[in-house]
Image 1 (tube, rainbow, N blue to C red):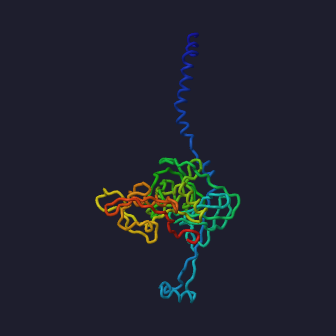
Image 2 (cartoon, one colour):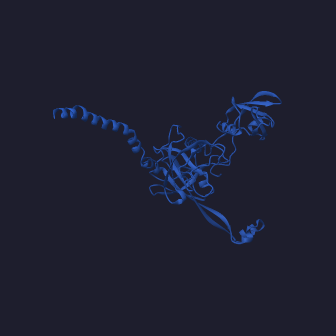
Image 3 (cartoon, one colour):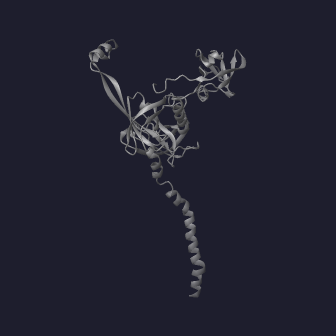
Length: 360
């Protein structure tokens, strides 16, 4: 009996306790994995007060008689009252950037609108005015007069990675505020639209019509992108959505607030790959805009642009981005090849012509 008690006290019980502790230590990482990020309610509650629904009204011409569709009879129809007006509406989302009423959304959400109505998470409703737009990035800034607004918390570091969890918040199909979950599928997607300045974030978080202009957030509820478009063969999401990166959106927002428009450097040349076997470095100057900075600097059609400020000119898209990233008035050093001779030319960056702004 004594030997049995000794065996329990000194061998079996310590072994049992050790086994339980060991099992717990082995299972702890799995338990942590099961309990970590099981809910993203905190992230959503942080960001949601900064997300708005946007409704727009647009008055468009409608023809009351088929003959009015013919251009030669349009004036007659207008004078006779047979050319009427029809209201069209659209919807989207937006993000409160400052507590004094400045909101960012997509330009295509508010383009051509006669009235812009903003609905806030707390039930407030306000009419908005356009502060400025930027069609190159499909972004717009609008302003409302409202109180108690909560600006979104913006991520300050640019370390978002492929595989990171993200959430899209918006108003898909007008059904109301909705959250979808996904990951960052890819970074730096370009050539998705005609806008050459955007390297999109790709995500499989569901983005549908009405999500445009809403935020893509991280698991802390911070803004990492602005949901802009989807790739789809139909009308719905197929797991390929694109968002404008937060840093680009912030830069456009601040430029519009300061200048009423986005100021980008401009040289005034049309560039294309050099003909031949591709071994020649540089880009062919196909056209020079009259009275442009390039024209003033003596650049000619047929020249080869080798580099700008010692950065090799390898693709027209990258060179365009480099020029757009300069400030109007900035001095540029251009390496040019003409007739087999290589030389440097100085040029002063102009401001890229644009039809953007409040009046478009």
